[in-house]
Amino acid sequence: MKQRIPYLDFLRCLAILFVIVLHSITPVIINPKFYSCTTWYLCMLINPLVRTGVPLFS
Image 1 (cartoon, helix red, strand yellow):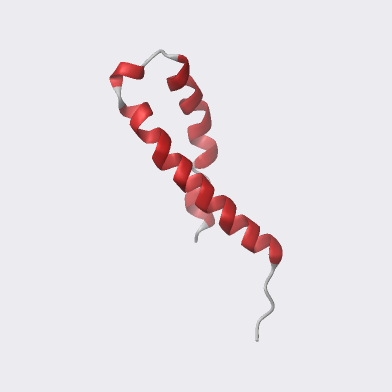
Image 2 (cartoon, rainbow, N blue to C red):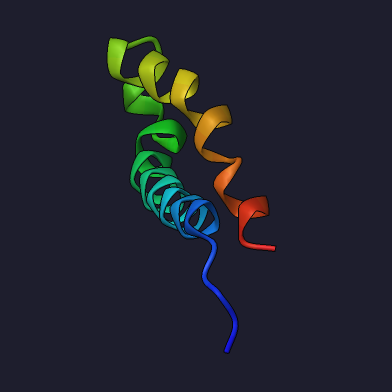
């Protein structure tokens, strides 16, 4: 039986969280009503960080 590696489990959980956040902020980013609002700028700052969750799955 293979031994589990705890830090890889942590990375998987982090990747799942990042993908959930990515899908949650996408409607704010693409909606023109939010352009130039504080919420839009916050989502634009978070976007590059959470996009790292996608490659973590591979």
